[in-house]
Image 1: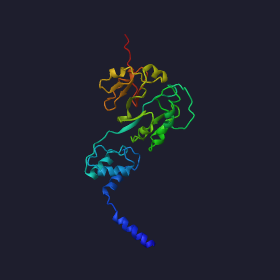
Image 2: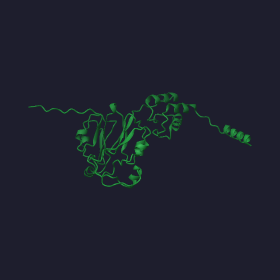
Image 3: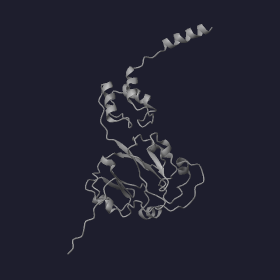
Image 4: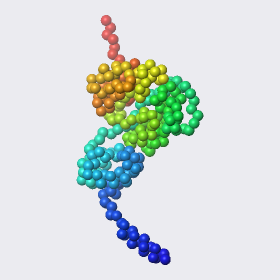
Length: 268
């Protein structure tokens, strides 16, 4: 009976056997095996299959792989793949305990998603970081950690692969992927509060109040103002640093720039 069952299974396997394109395994070997889902597919194997089956792979990209690996994949498939600028995760909230007054105490599940669905948070701003580290748990690359002093997540640029996992994990949408500039320099508005100026400032001392001063001073049309909130487009921004000094609430952060030298007043 065992022999007969084995023979039947063998015949069934031969009848329904599906030949697999050998390039799928070749492509998968070039991928990082992170299975982070940053490509939009459930794992590297599924992404490799999508690359092999797609006629146009220009819109497909693995954020964890470097340009050399993606070039090898394109060579294996005999297809063209567009080069993409590397990106890094940025936390658009600067609501530290010193900037946001505590208004309540949360006593529930340590989950940003659950807490966000129940109330606005322990501190005034209803849009700010809840500080429970769901983004940290989502990162497979040890690139984001909670700062115990600021109670905010911090990204280590060298470790960040731009996989988008932390972006998807944050229920407040305060994390976004931005273009990675030379020397890890970046300028962005660390606020997503769309409340009117007075209310936003009351809830957080460094909130954007929608005054528009940064918009007026930008010569590259990189800053827009919508729903009481300014936003800097990383693709258009030239890092000229004209906007930050204009912000009355210090909502614009300049990261990894040298300290500006103060102009000495001429002695008359």
